[in-house]
Image (tube, rainbow, N blue to C red; front, side, top):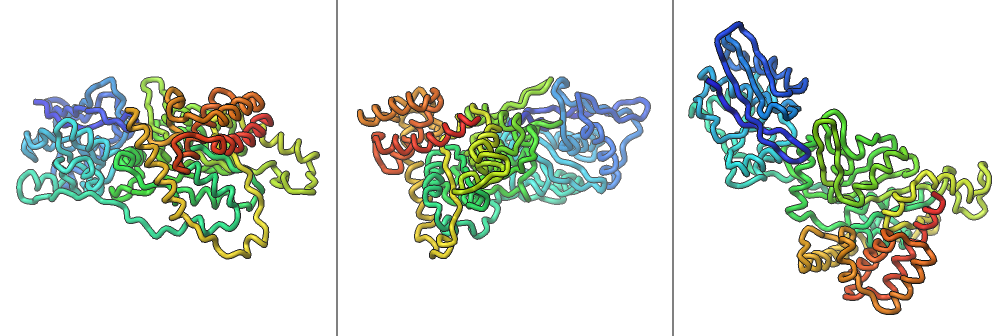
Length: 512
């Protein structure tokens, strides 16, 4: 007789059903796992054997075969331990044979019979709920699974003995409750930054419209401080955004204690990060930093110090909002709708914009051009806002803190985003949340401008040689500026400000 247990395999953040088939048949003692298992799955037989012995059970001296169907789907990870063990327990009569019917099972076993947390419990719970199944998972992941549905039956156990006792009726495991990670006191505030009013204005525009931002300035001018405070002015996560972020974090194994976080992600990888670390990949095609920053901020400090191929790998995700990781036998797509915030010095010396500076490498403009040429033109073309961040003087630091902080700016950002949500929902595009995501096909309707603005835009497009992408990005930024002002139509002043951010970007692009 073959015992069937349901579990899940993961393709990106999607969960695919896997049927664990356990057969205990006459023959020489053996324990075989088939169905394209990776090394972690193949080693499950030793963990299962030790866990059953620690739980007071012994494997029968017979031929044990475990098939993971479909057999042509690669099986990766340690979460197959628990379904294999429970299938064996049902096959030898340690638990009722029909006890596992209607349940999806995943968990890693310790040698003492304990059940360790695994990655991907939230997508697995959502997949189980879609199939009208309950879920058996580690106790440490129960709070995470409880978010899938209030009607989902969940058995979150700490050991194999607890599961066996639960099915026998000698111990009842209560359903876990959803948990949100406690948010600490917000310590980062725009009020901490003295001076840099133009940079704060650009930060507000970027937050209101979801635009990418590049800051160029001397070392110590406050670029990293500004970027770190961007999450403090972003609006709270919507339920749909919270679910998407949590599913990515669950697959990556970054949910501590099964508690979801209500804060927008802020990822700041080092400039030595590889392409797989940034965009995703590796042996198991895990999500990269750009996916872990989904609906949040990806901050790249010292932008020219990143490998050129790594930066160019961001071009498609920044345009499409998703990243595809292709392998020989499968292709995985992760969401990657991020706000890119980058910072760089004007040159390797960092003082090219300082008056009277004499560069040891020659003329400052040549040093600056050589340094900025490390950035490709197509990548810079995807950055909506580019600003210079001048060094802060001692007189600025002696001033009292500014009266306006993150709370006041966040209120304006939230109001502008509400306008955008209503606009795109009325157009039948509820998945579009910000102006930066607006497709070019709807810009003629949502980004209408007056005659004076049209003349300015036409002349600027010719003189700046704007690409089609650059033209549309100017319109998106202008639309955001109009939303911040509460205007229905884009005016000449909005286009002029949007073009002013593009002028500096064109300078850097010509250097590239």
